[in-house]
Image (cartoon, rainbow over all chains, first blue to last red; front, side, top):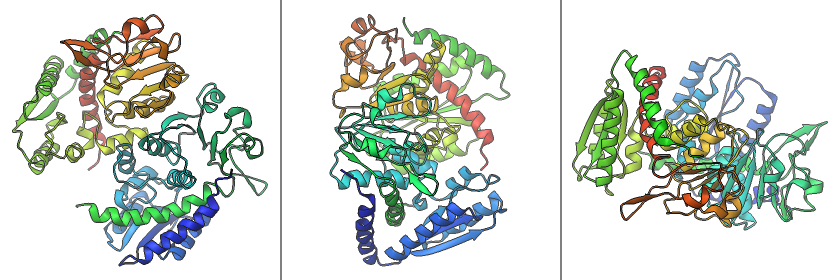
Length: 279
Length: 279
C-alpha cells in the first residue's frame, strides 16, 4: 500500500488555510537567501507558493553572495525583533565563508521554523514544546494519516543527519517507539534493517535498500531524492521492495511533498509559541 | 572480566589533580542545594570531597526549602555573572513548587557542569563542544580505559532518561556506534537486548536483566543503583550474567564511582569553554 504524500499534502494545505483564515492577524514568513544557488531558488519558490496559497505574508530578503557573517547576523537580529515576523528561514547551504551554525543559532528559537537551532533540538530531546525540522514532522504526519501506531514498533533509521535522522530519532522516541539509528559506519547493516517494523532511509544513495534488506510486511519510508538523467530516484529500490513491504512511500510523491506543508504548520506553531515565551 | 570503576576513579582523580595544579587560577565549583533531602546531602558531600582532593574551591550555597523559583533564578544569575565561578550545579531533585526546567536552563551553558540544559543537549546532538551529563561521560571513559572500540558495535541502551539514556545515545552516535534505545514501552525487549554487542541498562529495577537476555560475550554496563535492606543491587543480575558476558560492571564499584570524577573533568572543560565563548 502506497503512503501518498502528495494527496496528504493537498489535504493538509486546505486544513492549514482554514486555520490561518481564522487568525486575527496575517502571519509573516521571512525567508533569507544568500547568493543564487539554483536549487535554493527552487526551494524558495516552493515556500512562496505555499505561503501564497495558505495566506501568509512572504517576506523575501535576497542578499549578495559576498555578505559577511556579521552582516547576516545583524539582519537576522532585525527580523528577530520584528513582531510582524513569526518565522525566519535562512536558506541553506550558505557560502563557505559564512558560519552557518552561528547563523542558525542566531534565530530566536520560537521563530526558527526549520527547527535546526541547538536550543530547539535540546527542547525536542527533552520533549518540550518546540519547532521541529520539517521532514521528520512530515514523516510522522504521514504515518499518522495511515493510522500506523508507533508505540509498539521497532523503527530503524538509516542516516544520522542533523536535518532528518537525529531529530527523527528524538521525535519517535517521544512517541514511544523503540529506535535504532544506523549510518555509514554500521557493520552488517542488513542484519539490522531486516529487524525493522518501520524502516526509514535517508542516505542520499539511489536504491541503497533492496528487498533482501527488509522483513516481510515492513513499513518503508524513503527520504532520498537522487537525480539521475533528469529523473528522481529514492534510496529504496521501490519496485522490488514494494512486493515485500506492507506500506511504502514512492519517490517522488512520498515524503517530499510533506516537507513544505510542515513549514506552514511550523509557522503557525511559531506564532503560538511566541505568545507563551516571556522575554 | 570486570570493568573496575573504582580503580579508574582513583587513577583519573590523580590525573585531574595534576592538570589542575598546572592552572594559573584555582577553579570554583558552585553547588546550590535547596532543602535537606538526605540523598542530596550525601551527593553534595561526595562533590565536596572530590573538589578538596583535586584542588577546586567549593562554594556551597544552602537555601531554604520554601525559596521561590524567581529567588532561585536570581541567585543563579549572580553565579552566572561571577567570573570566579567556573561551574554551577543545582542539586536535584528540587521541591515541587520550583520549576526545575527553568532553573536548569538558567545556568549559562558553559557553566552547566551537569550538562542538562537544553542548549548543551542540542550542542551534544550536533556534536559541538559542550558539557555532557556525567554518568554517560563516565561510561564512555570506562569503555575507553579497557580499549573497547565503539565504531564497530551495536549498542543497546535500556532506559531513556534525560540524565542517562538520551545523552548516552547522542554521545555513542557521535563516536560512530550503531545505537538502539529501548524503554518501558518496548515490546519483546529480550529480542533486542540479545542483539547487543554492548548492553547498557539504566532502568532502576533490581536484576531487571538476566543471562537469557544477552548474547554470548556481550559487554554489559549496569547503571542501576537499587537499595534493598541496606544493600546495593544493580539492574543486572550480576552472578548469572557474568558467566556469559565478556566484560561487566559490578554494582557498587562500576559506573557509580565514575560519575563524581566526571564532574571534576566537566569543571575543567567548563573553564576552557568559557574562554572560547564570546559574549
